[in-house]
Length: 129
Image (tube, rainbow, N blue to C red):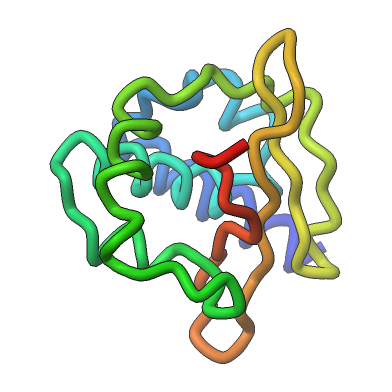
């Protein structure tokens, strides 16, 4: 119960303090377990708009070995990022894995939680698919 109340409080706080373009307030409210993933995707989309390569790299899994050489392609993708269907999200938040899908389309990418630094990282080169 405490965990649920903490999640709800966090969701309300983030919703009040964050302006999302990748999800509506209602979507965030309906999927409190996805708040961190929604925030991560928002951060990546914002980084694409601002051509902030380092932030993008910070949210990619290290196992993908993504470098600055990929940033132009990632930025181009994120500037025209697909609309995410948060209702279709395949989430195992407790297991640290989430897969997001385009509205009326295929999967975009998965995210895996790095428990060492509590950062969700994209686990595919989604801009290449």
